[in-house]
Image 1 (cartoon, one colour):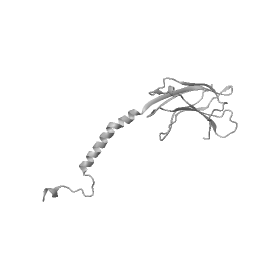
Image 2: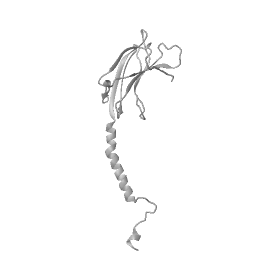
Image 3: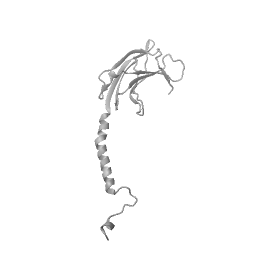
Length: 162
């Protein structure tokens, strides 16, 4: 028996087991180096909003308000906070999320003020200016929308049937 006859044959295998192990080790090393880079690139960002809602001259009590990060592309939108307005129509919301790019915070109001018997609720969306977005998990400045009278028909107002 010659030296060549003693070596195992890898019939049908494209790579020898040792080559496959080296490839796996290289792949693991690659992810060990670059995976933390992706995680640290996801920046924690925070935003806060407050205000008072009225329906005519009365507080808009129990109105649902939400704070969202609306994303373009494949990244799903993130709900940052949600609540119902207090007895005096006030709200105070805050939230944070991790994103690769700057978040796009949106304040949403779902209400029936001056709505008659139409199905669903009126939906208002207000974009929060970028100067109110803070790095980290806590907002440094609060965007105060002031006092909003929900009798107003806002540009781009929608109807939410759910």
